[in-house]
Length: 222
Image (tube, rainbow, N blue to C red; front, side, top):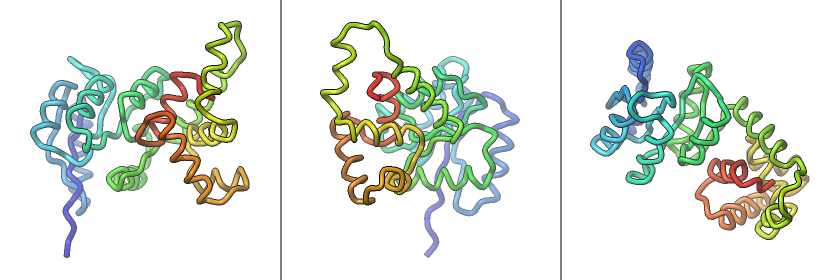
C-alpha cells in the first residue's frame, strides 16, 4: 500500500523561491504542496484551513513575521509541525522561533536531500537544528553562563531546577547532540540518557528537545 504524502504549506514572501520549492517537491512522490502563503497572516489562515502536516516557515515576512505566525499556529493547531527555513541565523530569530514552538530550524543553504530527510524526521515526531544553529546556541549558552554581578537569587534559581548531570545533558541537547552522542560523551548507557532527557523535559515543562534548548537560552539554565 502507498502511504499518504506529507502535506506541506510553503510560507515564503518571494514568489520565485516558492515556485522553486514547489517545483522541487513536485518531483518527490512522498511530498505534496497543498498551499502557499506570502505573509504570516496568510500562513495562520491557511494552516487552520488546510491542516498541513508541515509548515515550511520563512521568518522575515510582511504583515506578520514568521515567529509570531509560528506561535499562533502552534497555539491553535498544535499537531501541525513547523520547520523554520531561513536565509539567516540571527540570534533573536533562532531563539524566537524555538521559543514560539518551531520543531526545527534549517538554513536555506541546506542540501536538498538533507532538507527532505529533515522534513521526514519532523513529520515522524523528531526535531532538528541546523549544525550552524546548534553551534550558535552553544555560544549563546556559554555567554549566558559567564559570571556576572547579578543578584544571588538569579544565579542560584536554576540550580534548584536541574541537577549538575541534568544541566550537562541539557547543554549537549542544546548543541544538537543525539541521545546516542550524549551517551557516548558522558560514558552512560542510552537508556540512562533517555531517562535524563525525560526528567529534563518534565522539570522544564516543555514537550521536546528544541523547546528545552530554547528555554535554556532564555533563562540561563546552563
